[in-house]
Length: 473
Ligand code: ASP
Image (cartoon, rainbow, N blue to C red):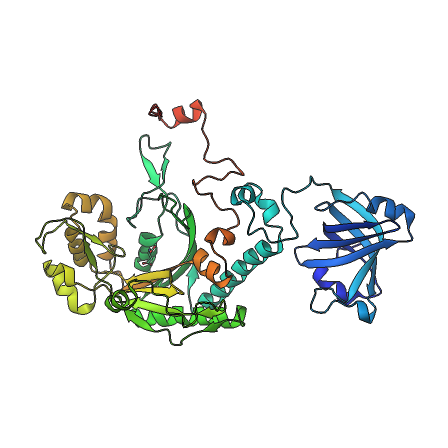
């Protein structure tokens, strides 16, 4: 018999059906046995009575065993109907049980939220954790939001394009993860901190509108809620200005909330735009939490923060023009506001240069950021010089970008969302790990796979690598 999904059972009242899934709850009551069964689409109750051979098998079933159940779908008597519960009006009268797989007793209850269970245990047994309703729902909603974004962007003429994972370092301000290149001894690929350069090179390639759910890797200390790898919804567009990008993103966010989170209220539309200086002065933060009511789990207060300073002083010298004593606040590929371009070219009034940059903030979290980029190679070169790069280093690290910009690259700009964080807020969770199917723990390890791990001497030899002795503790 063909399988019926649990969500569709109520369409089969009086019929004999077959379901396949897990034993969620088993209650042995002597002459009867009651069950909740579960598959990815939901739960249903089942009961065995008056069938000694079936009852005998039924009594052996334990939670998390995988079973195929045949039975008749009965409507429950009126006063037994569970209002508001999936399949609350039906019950399966079990006529046959096939055990597809047994299971050891799970280390935590699958029928309850695991939010308070030791997280190391949860990550180590992630496949069990993912079976819980809360985690299942988090991952499903992540899919739904991603699907809506894909459809929305497709509709707006964007192409979803993959960019390399084995790449060259892109300066986003963090340490790179590196991968030894066997075919180029002593050389290393870097894993992308973001697809920043590639997405700009796609604009040089005439793609005009790009997006990607991009995995980004940054080797940072895992303070707070950071993960060594995380997901950005990454976008880049040609022939646009800041307003075009902000409007498109704002509409997409509003669409997500209206279609997938109708119970939530957006505090203000259009999203307020707060200059950086005002945010710092009024809220003491460049990601202000402007919620009118911080106790309301269904209030979404989006705002844009704009007019960021382009450069930030890193060194102590008092010379405000000193070249090489500056770092970028967002990324080195940004452009300034049009009125500051001369200052970039002449390397003057560096502290006053405002970037054509925007961050999107939700309930006090930065959920995305982007900028209009420098598409004139002379301007990018000047920015890199302000940052203190020698001409030799500029050529070695950014020569390909300068060459591409000089090949007829259109004006362009983009943005990237921290997709895990956005989902965390929408799902009212406290950490992004609740929205990632397989997160790393606080030490950046995957205790389930036991990774990272040592590799064999032969592998090291193949890579022409040898390991240094570790300092004695
Ligand atoms: N690459 C930038 C980041 O990761 C986002 C952007 O400017 O589009 O923050």
